[in-house]
Image (cartoon, rainbow, N blue to C red; front, side, top):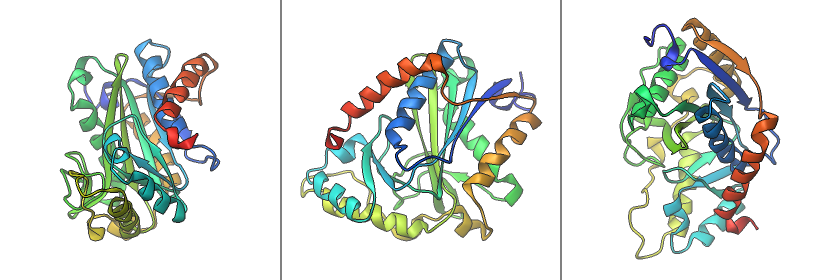
Length: 275
């Protein structure tokens, strides 16, 4: 089966659009959702999934961030800036989520081509390049030093990061998650993350990102064209259909609710500061 025939070797995709959500829809729900979808895909209840999601005014921390000596001071600073801190269940460091940040999840069976550890990352990069193809964007990968949440799968244009990738393997499936800045100021988001680390890190803390504001930019800033999350989400079905895939659209299914509720409880346990 070639990638030209079926995008990312999947002939069927389930699309979940959660880009227009209430402010009460927290990242706790999104991370629980992806764990739930891993179970559904692994068990054959669901085909491979593409889920778009948006959250309003959250900073998602990594486990290492949450263990910084003065993390409570860092979270108080974020609250003063109008952002709530959430600890995720996948790798990485602090990232900013707001209405101009598009989050995209691919949930795939961790078998065949996707049994390799980097295969899911490569699939997401390919999808991002297809999304940005109409804008003649040249998307590079590789760590952008000075960016927030730096990693080998930073995605950038002209040396400035606009997004990053993380993945979580669970129960025979892999959830690859990407965030990318669509609109707004990359520098202002970077400055807020730098402010968090300046307050949260103690004298003996090591290894946290040293953030430089001009290493991060939104796609609007990089491409010099108006761009919205809605436009990118709306382009996904045509990309998939162009590559021969059949599509279905849904939200959480009734049979998936018990698993989702269990995963919400696990996420709440990771976030005792929210109690």
